[in-house]
Length: 354
Image (cartoon, rainbow, N blue to C red; front, side, top):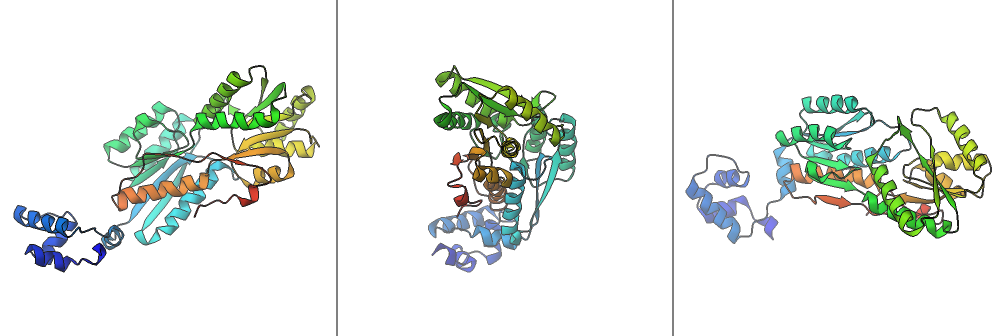
């Protein structure tokens, strides 16, 4: 077996010292050209496969990864990413890996810039990044490339930034899927409500914008006569204001029985519907946070689309670990499954795979 080949065996066959073989295996200097060729020839003949895990442990180096993500409350997609990332760090604790999470305001370019500059001052070994606008994010990623610091993108795939890897859904396809599934139960409707959350007219996530694009494309092609009425629950408003906005909308539009949102806050509408006893209205949303799952079970949410946020956090850390610590190649693009959950299968949906 390859793992049973000893350095001593290699040294004897190559006619060099054990120390020389060790320097060749770990790419250290002070090895003559002749000795290097002899050792490499023997390694090839013996089909030597180094134990990368043992080598990484023996190296005894510590690594600090940084994750830059939007400030958020509990019960959100981002919280699941954090939990998954921390779980991956815990699983690799023997390799002296640490994770520091840094937060920025999603709709404030200055907040993002200040946060990434602080990150750079800490000299990270690797970065997990939820991007903001392309050009503002590029300022950061250009600096990471300049310093040879690998980074992984979450939420929005921006290939021109040349990340080590990306984890997330294909947002346009996700929007198509959401429309297709919703119309299985709403095809006879004349009007659908779209709940959005914006600040100063801007959505907090490029991912949500892309989902809406995909959704509207599908609707325009297949159900052009159905009206889509938007309701905005501003991000900077107090929660108690939302009930007033929703009450006004549903009072003025009693014909609406189906709603959709592309963020993780479908439960805002779901809880309002339960509280006001509107049992003939449902909303479709994203993400398996507890409040959404509760509304799904109680019937005010019709469907939830899962995007495996926990796994995105876990696999991001694992990819940095494999690339930086084990020196292995990782997949550059990793689209997550688009899962549809109902009250009948929500209890069988598990956070982690395997």
